[in-house]
Length: 352
Image (tube, rainbow, N blue to C red; front, side):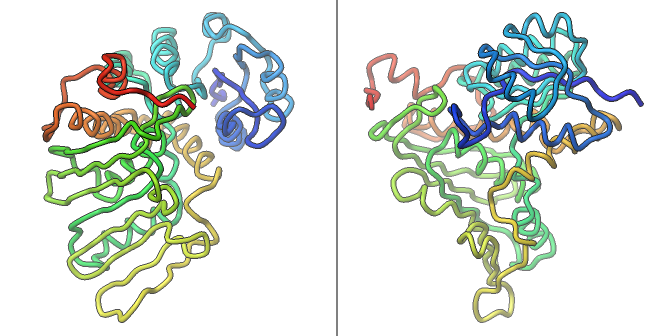
């Protein structure tokens, strides 16, 4: 087959390199496309041409644009990767879908307000465009082995999932997604949550709370909890509690996966081939998988509808705090409750 023509919106610089302002995720995406015989990077769009030139030198790409609209009009693209700040995701995804591309792979979090996240998924479904978001930890060995242990009944019946990370939105999108991953994509029925604006800051332009808590009830009775803020960000643990044991993912850099299962008198470390909970190899795996999904016509692991279920829980946690009560799903709000509360003067954003 003729390789899919791939374009990038947002090139950036590799993480920790000179001039880098983020993680340079576009470069990790590129590793996936360049590893596939079914894809070829042909066009790059970045408002900073110097960044696109640096990306081109590392990853290839025939044409460079400073206006992504021009790229979409001229480059005849099949796949577009988007690696920009969250507030830009929705307009860029919608522009790509309406330009007639076959697939869009976008960075996380999905968007800056819940309504625009719903709209991205809706429009792409309507136009037959494969939409994916980079929740790459679904491809990590510690996470996959943890789910395998659950499915094998190693800790009995799953009852509760606990996660810890710095915030509900930017980091939380990964852990909320993993709760659905461990629980075999079982829908969430309701959420009750709380957040505190103290200690707030901006991550890639998005307002992030200082402290947060989310309690989720899934349709199969499993309970999920995400704890964020001071202290929680240092743990980065997923803890899976069953009727006959416990699994921990991310206990430490040296022990990324361990189990205290049925009949055991203590913890047993599970071999993960040297992989921890981080690693660009998972981004590469995700890109290769979405290319295969596009070829075969199946749903990709990182499908937009799966990203949306995690995103709904994020915004439901904020909405619960705004309502001061439980939020039953599905939600009908379209805004970002915390941002709306700050805009209304109910809360004051801390300026750092």
